[in-house]
Amino acid sequence: MPLVLPPTVLGFYLLLAFSPTTTFGAWLNETVGLRLAFSFPGLVIASVIYSLPFMVHPIQAGLRGLPKSMLEASYLMGKSRWETLRRIELPNVRPALLAATVLSFAHTIGEFGVVLMIGGNIPGETRVASIAVYDKVEALDYAGANQYSLVLFALCFGILLLVYLTNARSLRRTVL
Image (tube, rainbow, N blue to C red; front, side, top):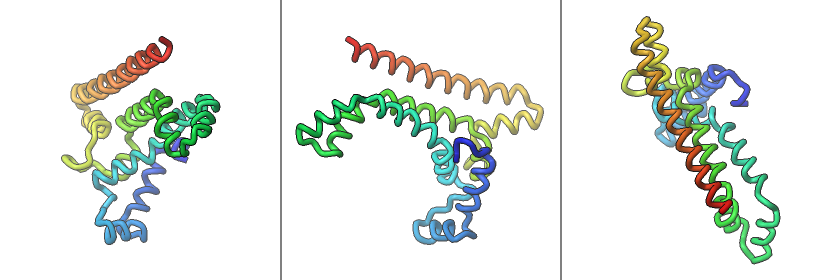
């Protein structure tokens, strides 16, 4: 659902769930001592939930691409499911894990709806760059909005370039 729901709808329902006036929110607050509505931890958890589909799909594709013979050989050698996962599957899907992590992070870094609904716009606590861009545009401060946007653009471009170069180097090593 996070893939197709508008971010504000997901954010609204998460805000309701995390609210200390609901059973779940009150339980979190009383049992764990965690207040999620309008807090940085809540913002992080909501962002993870929102970006989860962007992590799951590349990892699934990476796992599907593994030859069954590798797994069968591991089992025939007496390795457990956990050991096969740790020694065979995870090392072989490292590029997919990296891509999934970066896609999720890059997707979350510019997120607006979920972040605003859960975290609000509390300066010094929950205000993030995407909301700062919106605030600058709303105040007609296009130069300030440009500065924030340029930093976000450069950060995302740099991260994607780093992933591309890392995956290309990893692919070259496996081919050679």
